[in-house]
Image 1 (cartoon, helix red, strand yellow):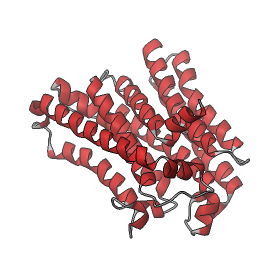
Image 2 (tube, helix red, strand yellow; image 1 turned 120 degrees about the vertical axis):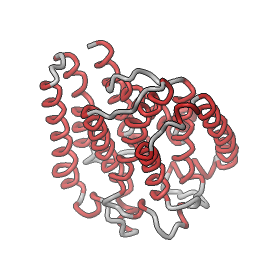
Image 3 (cartoon, rainbow, N blue to C red; image 1 turned 90 degrees about the horizontal axis):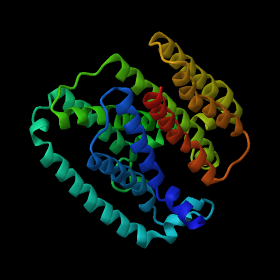
Length: 300
């Protein structure tokens, strides 16, 4: 069981499931419905490939980093896994293009720009095919790193599902205010998770002089003056929006659960946690958010 848990989290498959869940939530909340199964499989494979790429490129395992050691010990298997996932990625991509070619050729230049900005930023985050050797990448800009990750995730799980749904169903893509607000909510929520995740790498980032929030301001100030206040602002913004849109009290209540949990988990970060805690609990808040959002829109 322990091996399967490590495979799920260290192998980045959990990220793939989070991406699917958030994509479903965004489609439902923006009243566009569900995408096709091949689309969700493409989202899953793309996410796993991207996140695994950085770790598999590392030359050796760091004995102090359990995740790095796991990658080093399973490098042969992971290499084959990446090869298979790449083949699946290309096959699904070709299938989606073939099946939706009539809608794809109708995409405007503005829509192509929207489609292209998120993969471009994601590529700049690592800076190349060998992240550890890249002379320049956004990952080394400590204060900017969580916002970059939040931006890419928000685009991938908020804009892409709706845009591709429009392509699949041959309807015009017309973003609404609701879409912008949901993008902003996802952007800030995931950014807060990334800032919390940087707490795990405090010692390494401090030694390498990477100016993350926790390195610059310290643990307590990061938690009590950045994460918790911004989470509270996000919660207040959602409640205000929900009241103005006349959401039912049940829907409001279930959608504030992720914000409450975010604040609770941030408070708990004052004590050192294991790597699996960060991967399962902190990243798990993305899945909780998606599940709460799906329940809120479908039942209430």
